[in-house]
Amino acid sequence: MKKNFNKIYILLALGLTLAGQSCTKFDDKMYSAYTEETFPKTPEQFVAVTGPVYTSARGFFDNYFSLQTGGADEVVVPTRGGDWFDGGKWRDMHFHTWSANHEVVAGTWDWGFNAIGTCNRVLSILEKAPENDTKAQTIAEIKTMRAWYYSLLLDTYGNIPLVTTFDTGTELPKTAPRAQVYEYVVKELEENLAALSEDKSTATYGRPTKWFAHALLAKIYLNAQVYANTPQWNKVVEHTNAVIASNKYALDANFLNQFRPENGAGDIEPIFSIPYDANRATGNTLFNRVLHYSHRITYELSVNPWNGWSTQPAYFDLFEDDDLRKEQWLYGQQYDNAGNPLKYNNIDVVIDPYGYNLLPGSDFDIGGADDGGRLAGARCVKYFPDKNQLNNQAGNDVVVMRLADVLLMKAEAILRGATNGTRAEALTAANMVRGRAFPTAPNRLFTAANLTLDAIYKERALEFTFEVTRRTDMIRFGKWEDAQLFKAANAGETYKRLFPIPAKARANNSNLDQNPGYPN
Image 1 (cartoon, rainbow, N blue to C red):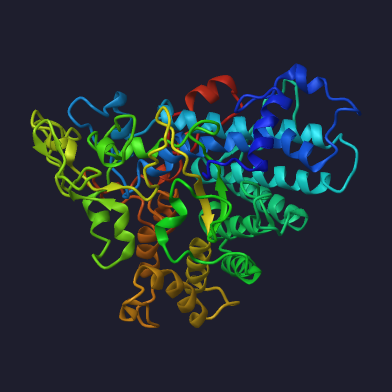
Image 2 (cartoon, rainbow, N blue to C red):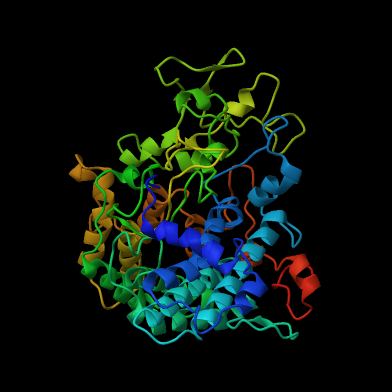
């Protein structure tokens, strides 16, 4: 994020003070202190009170990111000697052997429902505030954020409780079927869409606008057949067309530009982003997960990276050499910031995208005394390492939704049967994305003959690495059970398209039913 914090970030930070808020909870005493005189009245006061809803969003890049990414084919987090075993949680993610006690499964649930609870409590304050021009829009924004949080849990756990009020009663909520949760989310978004701002500016950056609601609805409708067994391809085209017709967004000619440490409100492609800052808005530690230890010298970092996450060979092989998106990968000989070849423990730092050599008797440990295992696997630096990071925290804002996704969703929906769009429109939309990746090679564009669903599936992999779309895409395209690097195909385990309801949550609430297929 840009280091000169603008007004919105100052106000969001102020919200923590005004609301007595941690990242997930208000202070009850502060809540009870609101009176007619202290209710928010000005736009700045409304932003301040709602700040906790947005600071909660930073958890998106923690357990939720790991849950969506760790079991997909875009990544593998093998044990590297003594590193990255972490109780076997990454092994379980890769092999799809997670349980209701899995740390990441439980952590994501806690984050999501804490964020929803924060939304409910903020709404309970705002709904009592005096009517003014700002109140309706602010309530619509918080309800949209709550719908976004619910959409994430809808995608990962499916059958979850619907809690939409701040209620201090003792009755515990019951599990709602996934289709009911889906209906709630789309209804909430559709009903609040008109009250959201149409502005794309510093003032609305990091907050939901009408265009984010349209894009989110398109995403949910794209997966309606998975969520509710009801395809909604025309709805996908309707909402993607609304974003496109707004003329608020454009593809950035430099694909990686929108992920740099200085990204922010001025970028032309992102529709919704989560602001991060190395000092005041922490939570982006991705660079540490992917970089080799020696990359500290390359990127002038003040910390040693953790050398863990890398991509699987088959995924890396999707990227052709003349695809500009391949620039997001580190592989081959690595160099310091002066261009000299890097060495680590007297070994040349040569990252081998295919070097996953298992230790004898192991199914997931690729380490070894010669450090060779620690150099296996291409590393994704789409979110370019921030040399101004502090205490392992980077300042890159995290892009949640951008125009390229809107364009490929439209193309996919038409190919799947939408009747309110033509194949020519699908071809145009898909080639806008692909053309950026091959700007000097028009022969690499899609044609009417080769623009297929398989082509869209591959293009989404090329375009959205580490953007928390791959698991959802794999499920929608029927690929989730396919074999991966070390994992055998598990065609008989389609129930694992949902994660289990965490054991801790069910211990605290006996009204929660376990998802089918998992031990009760």
